[in-house]
Length: 84
Image (cartoon, rainbow, N blue to C red; front, side):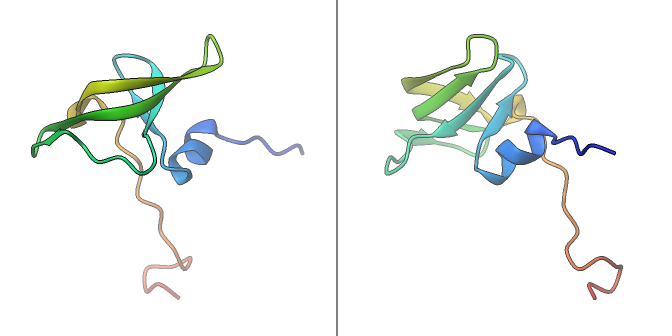
């Protein structure tokens, strides 16, 4: 049986997050800090990857609200309830 890869699992391990409203993946630009950060979001430089156009575009001064990010499932490590 062929294996299928879940792009959401692959992208989330590479620090990409899925923006539910934009329907696009995003990641903070390396070596940058948010211009503003609160408990509900941040503003800064992000890479936006659109799966429809298959392009990565830098957006500076992007306002990210955390509730617009898809929640990543928690991955259990160790294979059992006791972690072993």
